[in-house]
Length: 255
Image 1: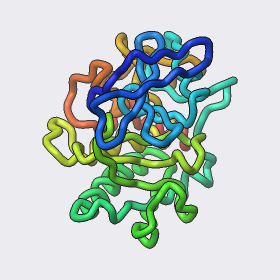
Image 2: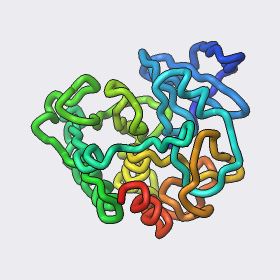
Image 3: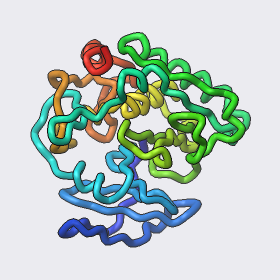
């Protein structure tokens, strides 16, 4: 969840105008900006990442998010009053693979995913299942899982995930190599707790610097201890762990 590279690219009249963003390795990338926010476009992809780790599949989804409101507290997307979430049966069968491309870090990622998943499973009726038989062929096109966990290098974030309404090709939990460096006070398990919150449908905890988007529904009062607080939006506490209000919201969303 590092700061990202911005260029002077604008979202104008519903049309996305994109230019390259120098200095992003290993491939050139691009950004779009609107109302003071900017989004990183992943190389060779229609996925845009805003606020460090929120991934949106296509420019239209990004435009919808960037329209802001004054909604307080932990929020979920609810366009036209319909909450973006998994069905009860889907929520109890969230299968994923962890790519063997992590190499010597594979076991650490598997362990951190287990820890992060257990935190959400303890407070909500959800079940994240590591389908290890697919680890050797863990890609965005792997149909045997709901999502894939894969390594990237030179991204604008430590990690990024997706929301329940994403197409399979965009249902990726990507972890940049920098997430394995010195990231205190955060841990890899903490980062993945935050990302799995997005997988379940939670947006970032709104703050004065990062107001809530439109088409969202609040589930809690403002909560500075929320696991869904993004560090770039004023988070000042330690590692990313579920708060009491996070647990209540998760239990409400997935009873």
